[in-house]
Image 1 (spheres, rainbow, N blue to C red):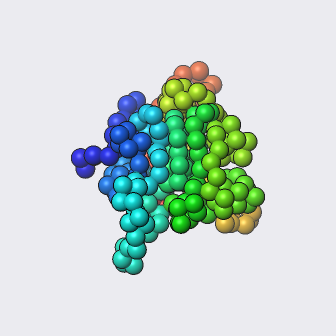
Image 2 (spheres, rainbow, N blue to C red):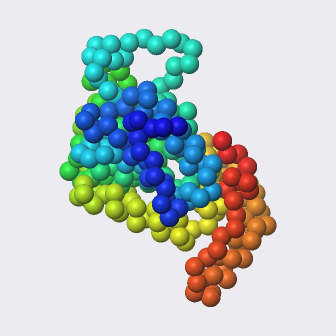
Length: 268
C-alpha cells in the first residue's frame, strides 16, 4: 500500500509508524485507519520486525477524529461494515512489542489508540483525554475494555464519563503511561527501548509472552497456568532456549532462530 496519512519505516529491526497529517494535528480519518491497519499487519507478518513504535508528526500525536465535517462528523453509518474499533488489527494483535511514543496531544481516538499499545511513553506537558461524551458520543477503539484493565475502574470512569482533559503527569499518576518526558525526548526514548528489545530479546519469547499477557485478563489462574505451560513447552523445544543461556554465559550477542510467523500459532 502507498501511504498517504502515515509513514512506515523499518530500521535495525524496529518499525516506526508515524501518524502523518501535521496540518490537522494528525487527526484520524478513514484513510489513516486503513493504512494503520495495513502497517500493523505488515509488522505482525514480517520476522524482520522485532519491535514497533507508534508516534505522530509533531506538534501532536493525534488530535482525535477529524472534525472537518462539523455536525456530520458522527452521522449515522450503514449498519453493515461499521465498527467503532477504528482498525481491524489492534496493536495488541501484533506479535511484537508495540510502544506508543505519545509525543504530543492525544485526544479522543488519539488516546484510545495509544491504550491498545503494550507500553506508553507520554509527553509531560501535552493534553490527554477521551472527550467524546462532550461531543455527544462515547469512547471508542476498545477504550471501555482497555482503560479499566490498565488504570482500574475508578480511573476509567473518571476519564470516560467526564470527558475531561489532563496532562502527562496526571496520566502517569493514573497508571495510563509508564513514563513522562519532555515532548522532544519521547520518540528517542521509545526508539532506545525498541532497539534494545530488537537486539536482545528473543522474538518468539516476546510474542508468546505478549499473546498470553493480553489474553490473560478474562482467564482464571488455572487457565493462565495451562497456557504458560503450553508456551513453555513450545519455547523449550526450540533452539532459542539454549541460545539465550549460552550467549549470556559466553557474554556475546544472541543469535535467535525462532520465527514468530512460522512457530507461534494463533497469529493473524
